[in-house]
Length: 318
Image (cartoon, rainbow, N blue to C red):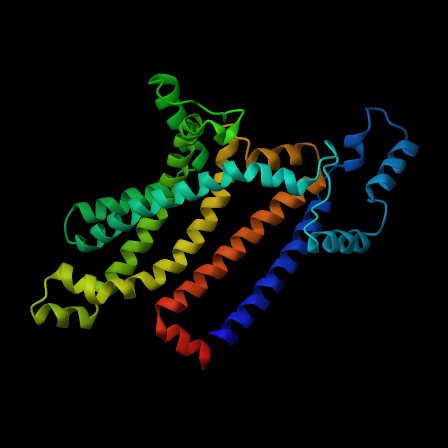
């Protein structure tokens, strides 16, 4: 595993650098000049040029990128062009909203999707097996923001049992209010994520149920449930682990989007505000943290997959 981990770590670092390059270049292709955000309407050309010099955007792009990359290497994500606050601490202050939302939605999606997916595979010959698959397929096509609006309309506006959005001003110092504020966002993200996860679990379980070694175990007297638990569960979990890693990364990105629907003060609101104000350091910081999170989750899922399946470790060693 050590050589594999070294290779995988090198790929991870290379992917982060490439993602940083792509992020930097794409942001510079956006219309608008960040210097204009610092100046009033009707600023002169001299004022705009002075603002560009103050921001460092008057230097060549390679110089700007190397300067930014050197700062990122020291965990310095720069300062907001608008508020002049450090971007790193600002992101850290918003993670207590985004991270609990992501983890709670992911856990709820797994708790729903895994048993439902296994049940749909085990009952594929019954009418409700295809129905579950069709419902999951429909759920994949439904946008997360539409589900959020539907839940707001039902539980916040009509039933008035949950808040439509917002977060306590003192954050988790009021845990009951914080949890209440996250219920609808968590359910929104979990419903969307569980739809695709159900199909993956169902497909992996069907592959195992048709395996020869499982039929042999049943022929030797084991019940279908016991044979699957003893011989098929671990094999079925191998492809699902990789999918779970992707789903966790997708859940994080989905949470950032859903935060805007529910007016949560997380990374989503920070990113939206940064885009509207052409605040490059804020956009770069949030996107870089999101990209790094996705890559790290994929790295962890790949490692866990090889720990579970010895065949993958042997293949990596060869």
